[in-house]
Amino acid sequence: MAVFERGWGDWRRGREAFHGIFSGITNAQQRRKIAVQIPSKITRLQLTNPFKIARRATDAYREVISVEIDGGIGETAPARFYGETVQTVEEALKIVGPVIAADLDAIQDVMAEVETVLGGNYAAKSAIDMALHDRLGKKLGVPLYRLWGLNPMKTPQTSFTIGLDEPKVMAEKARRAEAYSILKVKLGTPSDLEIISALRGVTDKPIYVDANTAWSPKEAVRKIRELAQYGVELIEQPTPPSDLQGLKFVRAHSELPIIADESVKRAADIPALAECVDGINIKLVKCGGLLEALRMMHVARAHGLLVMIGCMIESSLGITAAAHLTPLVDYADLDGNLLIANDPYVGVTVEEGKLVLPSRPGIGVMKRENAGDSPPRYGT
Figure 1 (tube, one colour):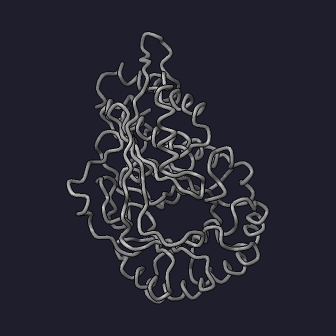
Figure 2 (figure 1 turned 30 degrees about the vertical axis):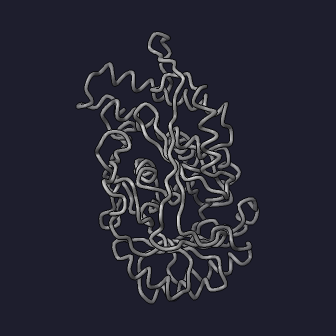
Figure 3 (figure 1 turned 180 degrees about the horizontal axis):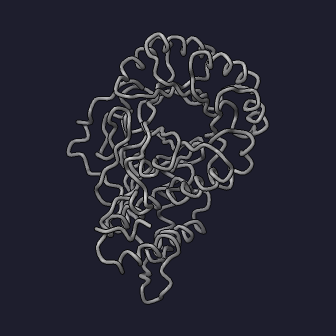
């Protein structure tokens, strides 16, 4: 276990951290029961280019809400598709702060208390969970991946997303995305095959396709058969989220792996999907945070499923938190921070397409001195 590695400092502190993370500190004298204040801030992230997917109109910006808990910071990017907004998160945070009475080191215990109050407010829970992990990592002086005993050199390459547009525009965006090794292409229009054909005219990079629930089962089977001829490597969420039989039909007739996204939110959803898809896409915002993401990974592996970790359009704070889990996954789609022009943080970076984790304690991000000076991005 990583808490016993040399360089972590005092052994007793390491032992307490182990129990704090995974089981809680049971000695009443060691517990620090307080009513927690959770200040929050809404930030508007400006997209480098308008971004469109099959089920949503073009966006020029996205709003995220950040929180602070005893020096730990977290962020969430609530999605209306899942019934949450920055306003619902703000209201949830007002309710939950005064009722948290667990030792903040015992993240599992704290989140159990949060669950009793917030229930389905998963975006809010994600921000709290993230801040608690950041706080504990900072307290122990180690990055998150060390809390879980992970090797930061085993991060995968991340895909880079090309949003929906005219085929020639998407092809040009793909051509400009030269810094990224894998492309994720949004589809779900009558021009789907024309789009992929146009992209193949400018790049031979691996392509993941995300239909964002836009196809019927029979349409999906037909399109997947044709997309396979263009070297597409996987298909994400081809059909509506509640149509599990439709997903099962598609998987049975597909030569490409089928990855569930909108159909799977939390670990409890996975058993019903196990024979319908080849893998799942985990997002901190929709599942409720890092603890639940880890549970989802364990359940998915127990069912023989592939694991992708994805994101919303977020700053480097949210993206970096998720990136600490990437040594455990098969696919990473962590490019939300690469699509914005005013990223307020510096954290995980991409070198030759590969995610490079920061070695700073906690999540490991730093405030950018001038968020308007975010490095130029390509594609989208």
